[in-house]
Image (tube, rainbow, N blue to C red; front, side, top):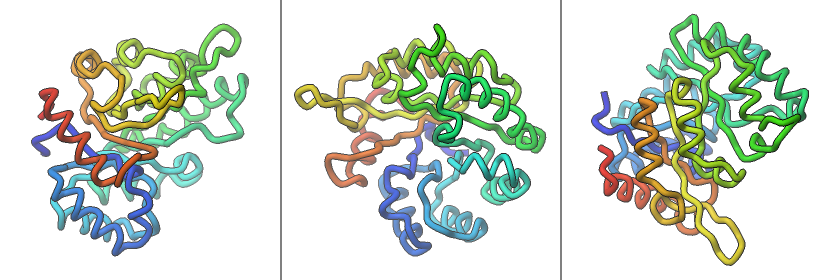
Amino acid sequence: MASSVIGAQLYTLRDFLKTPQDIRSTFARVSQMGYETVQTSGLGPIDAAELRAVADEHQLKIVATHVGYPDIKNEPQKVIDQHQTWGCRHVGIGGMPADYRSEDGFHRFAVDASEAARPLIDAGLTFSYHNHSFELESLGGKTGLQILADESDPETFSFEVDTYWIQHGGGNPVTWLQRLKDRMHIVHFKDMAMKGSEQLFAEVGEGNLEWLPIIDACKAANIEWYLIEQDRCQQDPFDSLELSLKNLRGFGLP
């Protein structure tokens, strides 16, 4: 078991994960920063067993993933086998498929994804939905995110709250962490800074999000993994991940 609850969401480093050799060297750098856990996302092609070997070589535990929704729906056993190879329980998707992005689509996706995730749950895994800001649009009196919460199956459908994107959509990260507290295993930490009127992705602690209340809400929700992600970096992405880790430790997280 890792001694830290903080992990690196590797989508941040996607430009450095295109080949197996890239993956090996990037895992080495992430480990050297002090990370013990990662979420895989944005990796180039690599065999599942080889990825597990690379992670083990660099003392990194794969604690969560982002995979394609069609893989979950059409090839659930393949997804299960991969995650069992990695020793990873938490399966996530990075966003809603394009053909569901309508008012009717939110209602359909809540039902369809709940059913598609059932084989994962039966195999001892979890399924989580990662939000952006479009889910905060009001659709018939409710936000899309609330529709998903109300109409999906709590036994199979969990949430992966992203602090930046909740704020970007005009929501309050603390409120949504409280609202979904019984249906989360993972949270994405990223900050928001301003340049004039432009919203920018920022390292955790370098922007305007109020981190101590956010962290308190995560603790109250028994979040298992706090995963640092930065979609776009204003500096070297490795330096961004290292700074976010340093700042989160400064807030008292192990």
